[in-house]
Length: 312
Image 1 (cartoon, rainbow, N blue to C red):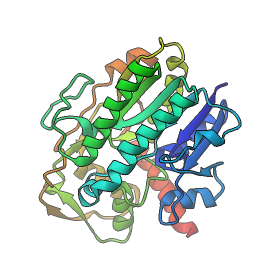
Image 2: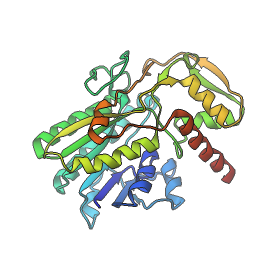
Image 3: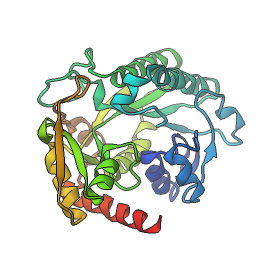
């Protein structure tokens, strides 16, 4: 059993992670819990134990038990939001991550696992492994995540923190946030209205179910404590088999027993046309490969959505 501290604990991934890890570990989690944020709904439902806290503040000082591992998931996410309000992304993804590092350093936390993103990769790469180019992000969001990686690399070298960064590929599943494409698709399709698909839906994403993210992190918690002090590793976490967004929408419509109506729009210049994760490094490290097939994952997500809509 390890003492684990999670930032963004009431977020989409954070919620699933806490529910899974609390069976074996001692978990403390914070989230901003803004009343306009979906995280507040999760907190008020009492599904998990969560405290209100901001990564831009000195959150670790208040803890009675110092964590062995910090899992840093709190972030401003989304491509379009970073274009509309870049300062918010700087405040959270860069300054907030800096504060997490400072808190780890000052409180003697040895191990840090943190969320990065496939958005750090350059466009037009057929398959992305951890050595693929990351010098030309299309989105400001991707740039903030890459800057987080660079800061963490430096803190590992300078202050002996041992860290693992996780480049997530298009995560979906139950409790997906209302601002995410999956939720918007489900709600619009359920209402028998038209969704918007870029390039007729002919863009490809490596959709990864949240259960595979959670299982990977669980195994990485064990592995990171075996690493030498000051090491920093980065891993892709993706299913490894991209499909078109049109097919993804078709699967959602089928699971909801609805017809798919859509209109096409040009692909924004800050969106990647194609993502495909190479996860061989992760598989060799933790002896696990993401395994939830898209059909199974969409069913889990839409079953939750139908139940949530019924209970509202």
